Amino acid sequence: MFDDLFGTLGAEIGKIFDNPVVQTGLKAIGLYIVFMWLATAFWAYRDMSQRTTNPIAPYLAAGLIVLFTPILFIFGVILYRILRPGMTVAEANERALAEEAMLVEIESQPHCASCGRQVHSDWIICPTCRNRLRRVCPNCSRLVELDWSLCAWCGKDFERPELLREVAVPPPAGRPVAEPQIAAAVETAGMPVQSAPSRAAAGER
Ligand SMILES: [Zn+2]
Ligand SMILES: [Zn+2]
Image (cartoon, rainbow, N blue to C red):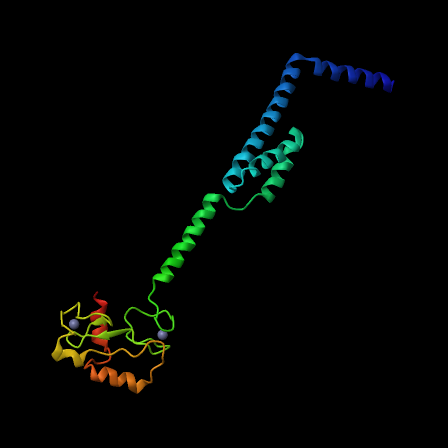
C-alpha cells in the first residue's frame, strides 16, 4: 500500500519535472545562478584591481570565487570580503597626499635656527635657547629680519655710517646668551624690546 502511494507520488513528481514549462524554468534558474557566479568572479577581479597594484592578485580573487562553484560562491564572496585590502589604491594615495600636505605645513612653520624649536613669526627671541630671531626697527617699531640692510616697512637704512652703531649685533648662534647681554645688545642698538603696540603693527602685515 505504501509502495503504491510512493509509486504514485514518484510518478506525479516525475510528471511535474517532465513538464516542458518546469524544465525551461529550471534551466533558466540554473543559467541565472551560473551567470551570477561568473559576474561575481568578474566583480572580485575588478574590486581587487582597485585595491592593489599587484598584477596577479585580481586573478587570484576571481579564481577564489570560481573555486567555490556556482552553488557555494556566496561563501567565496564572504571570504573575499574578509581577506581583501581595506582601502582602494586611490584612497591610500589620497591619505598619503593628505599626510604629506600636513607634514609640509608643519615644515613651513618657522623654526629657531639655533635649537630647532618651532617659533611664532612675531617673536624676536627664541624662548628656549635665547637665540635672536628678529629685530625691531628703531624708526617704525616694526619687526625686521636680522639680515635686512634697511627696514622694508619704513625704508630706514641700517647701514649708513652715522647709523652703524644702531645696527643690532645678533649674538652668536648656538650659544645661550645671558639675559643682561641681550638687554645690553638691545640698548646699544637703540631698539626697545618689542612692546605691545609694535606687535599690533606687525600683525597688520
Ligand atoms: Zn632656539
Ligand atoms: Zn622701519
